[in-house]
View: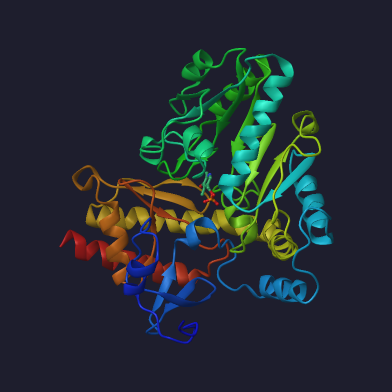
Length: 406
Ligand SMILES: *Cc1c(COP(=O)(O)O)cnc(C)c1O
């Protein structure tokens, strides 16, 4: 057997040789990041308007997060949930203090956090009446890639080929209170929604919809679950997006920015929702990992401050105005939408279905942005991106759109 080839150079070609082909990454391989920039193997820099898919809330290698990780790395890495740890307890205490929640369960990804939220919903329903097991979800929603979460998610492309799917799931149009009213019955155990739909195209829920969801859930003793995996943890200018609406859920999931780039997720809930989750009802070997919790706590201390949250609102105004000006100048985008630093630029009618082209061209111009479906270019930069980087990224987006509009 050959020696392990750790020092051998790697290129994009290796991806096609040894990786499962579930992704099609560009040729660029980033090797370093700092603040709102990343650098590739050739030393070329990219402005990061993607934030690692809304994960790197404080940019890359934020000194406070590096320090928290380093400090914990010399103390304790893992004991599993056979024992609890100080970082997990500290983080849970802060999350409970900062939200509607009474209790927290830690896990490792957004999909996993939703998986336990949906399992909890079923326990809740079964505890009330036999057959109270229906989960009502929205079309165009995204809740993760486990079989249960793709099934609750409202996008057929993610379930196709994986049948048979879990039963007891109904989908309704997002932001349509009347459709929700019709779909929810006494057999419903939970309604789940993203306060801002992310993967589905950056669509904020209306105030009316959120209020209706709360009222309808209460009327049928169903749990209201917010999936804040993408829109939570400062992204919208409040710690959690639901705080804009003033309507608390019974259950909420958080991931992505929660760890600032270190994998961690959480399911938060009220005591009433938590009561049937007893010893042995659910588990996770890595959940509440001390390294992850230490980094998340450091991120929370910075993000949950008026300076940073207010800064998100200021940066949002600037970025949106910049995107709209570029959209108007070159005709690629309709007016942008979203909340805080989760912004979607829908493709103009003449450019339908071509968001992916914009993303690819932007990378050539040194700008990393994302798409949210075929028709929306998505921006989710660091919550503390410096003004100069915002300007530079917008200039690169302008150059991208000028080239495409030709
Ligand atoms: C990304 C995302 C998920 C899935 O999170 P993973 O960490 O990829 O499992 C779930 N819900 C929403 C709203 C997301 O944006």
